[in-house]
Length: 272
Ligand SMILES: Cc1cc2nc3c(=O)[nH]c(=O)nc-3n(C[C@H](O)[C@H](O)[C@H](O)COP(=O)(O)OP(=O)(O)OC[C@H]3O[C@@H](n4cnc5c(N)ncnc54)[C@H](O)[C@@H]3O)c2cc1C
Ligand code: FES
Image (cartoon, rainbow, N blue to C red):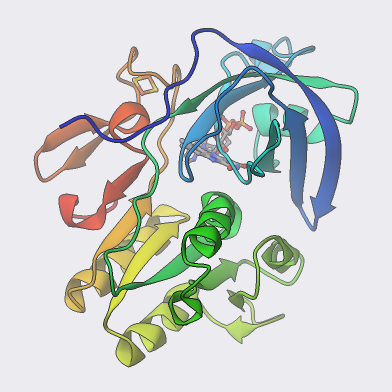
């Protein structure tokens, strides 16, 4: 069966940047994409700056880079992205200002599916992995507006107080920092373990570094709770052509850009 997905129009589109906000080390870029469809939560885009892309040290960044959609407010052409400067591509994107533009391709991949009836969503994000959970929180709030008891719980984890400024991007999260400088002192997965001990009828949605996702997978397996994990791998094309993004599942290798980035945790032996 073909997965439910919003298909990207062919070709890259120019998307003018309309706003830039900073949350500690994270940059939120807002742009206008009148030519594109509204994405699903968990889908991603291949992004590059419209000008000055490449030509740095070793000609990098050469290829576009993959980014989850952070928000796509309904009835607008707006797309929001969350970027953390970790290398030449993300650094160039973090430099962009209103009146600059992105070249984007997307939406790509398969996003999150709704929780089964009677299961409450728990969103678990680590660092920049909070991005796809913001749009999912927005969508779940709309879908479940008449069921306040089913409203999703967001649990977020950050390195330190400065990174924890990113917690303001989601509504009413509980959060943890590795160094205890704000929120719970420890890992976000400790907050999840506490919650799973209290509540069984839940479905977990997670995105973050591999170690965090592996702990989420193992905890959910131990509690027999379904989980959908938004994974990352290096992506050169984003649409299935280069096979650079394969990950091992119980049923063989899959291309994360077309079969993911959201995979059922039950499909994975472990998150590598
Ligand atoms: C589906 C998907 C969604 C993503 N969403 C976001 C997002 O919302 N916000 C965001 O800031 N980043 C996101 N990323 C990661 C982002 O694509 C990488 O950080 C970026 O490609 C790094 O490029 P660079 O040129 O800045 O650094 P590089 O020099 O290419 O990499 C810098 C460091 O990051 C590591 N790295 C590079 N790419 C990845 C990757 N894909 N996964 C894990 N580690 C990587 C490298 O090993 C290196 O240590 C996403 C990745 C994927 C696959
Ligand atoms: S990124 Fe090229 S096949 Fe997935």
